Image (cartoon, rainbow, N blue to C red):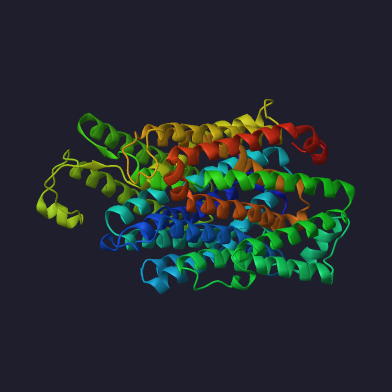
Length: 601
């Protein structure tokens, strides 16, 4: 493919979309497998006792580190987007990110204090190079087919959540049941497979994502007649100061808590030094943003204002939605009855078997569909991809066999147990892993994403503001379920035995809310932003996500304080009210934002 015509991508489609979309689908799937697999274990690893191999941290300290880590993951996309746009191109950025993440997971598998922190740093930078540039490639592939972008991003999001599902399910299971290093290590293995598959299939993208050349830059500039707005020296100073304060704050916040105040770079500002630093950084950024908006052409300025509005709403969505690996995982671990007996034990095992085998079979079908179109030209890449699936199938079957054995429904000889590395048990027990509930989010997305994709492509496609309003309303409904379920837990209680149904409901409603906001939000960025700014603006979008992620950590830090004083239910009712208020605000602002979008749907 010498000429980069987007029509060529649609000549030999897979499930109605270009084959290249599904190369990205599987690459992102393995990256999300590694990211969510490790993430599902982090809070549990940090708060588990020394006897059980953890670090025995307080929930407050674990949430502080978790919030900063996940926030930095998304914040680093600014750096990765810039390097891809200006220096190395989308493709090399994806490869560099994948290598760094593979090394990061390998480092975490060593489990020493130094290796865990080093692993987190490598994962932060790896995600920064990887994440924004995958979506940038999709944006370029569909630049002449805007009506299919929502569907493409929703299908892509299905791949994201397929990886998240199997990552949480398998890495979480191995980490909780076998050993933390097994969970961390497995995440790195599949990141390596994803990198190889992408590298060997990259010619399927034509000229998209290559290292920028003088010719490609000149061509892009010729097509883009929008008013230029270069950064003045004083603006670069403001950016540098705001970024420095923000980075120091997000690093210093957990460091000061974990060290008991011994490490605190803002101590010279007094007791509220951290708060003063971050407020100053945000004010500087807002001032610069408002000023720069006045420098663009009217239509571009208004479209960027619409993107900024949606980014603002996104902060609240992720701050509440990302309680999943934080306060909701703590709720599952400490306040939920996860031991099943009698018929409930067998029912769970059957359901768990179905939700493991069926999604894996569906994704394998997508894999075979891709094989039919691409095996001739990309045989090695497809063989590597098939090898990774064989390994996943093997681990999944091993996990199910182990569960049936420990529950007393499967008899295995001593030799078979030794061969399968399964410990012998004398008392039958079925205990649902705390991380298992997080898989429900991905499972529901795999199930519901095609339905939402069809909805967005139909004549009943709601406006952007309605999508955000509906999404936040569903988020509120989910939090109301968990708040209602926690009503009987007394203030100060450290354990309880609440029914699992409340966690299942919260993940169902939150998943539907996520499908209304997250993939659709990415689609609007690509539709509203000029091509020359696309990777950078995806980075700005992820900056909003980063703020939300850190906000999620800050909410999680306060769960014990609020629960001790008012009860755990109070904490979740607070999040319910915030979600509902933001959803109503989005709907009320519909007429204003519609004008700013200039006909973009």
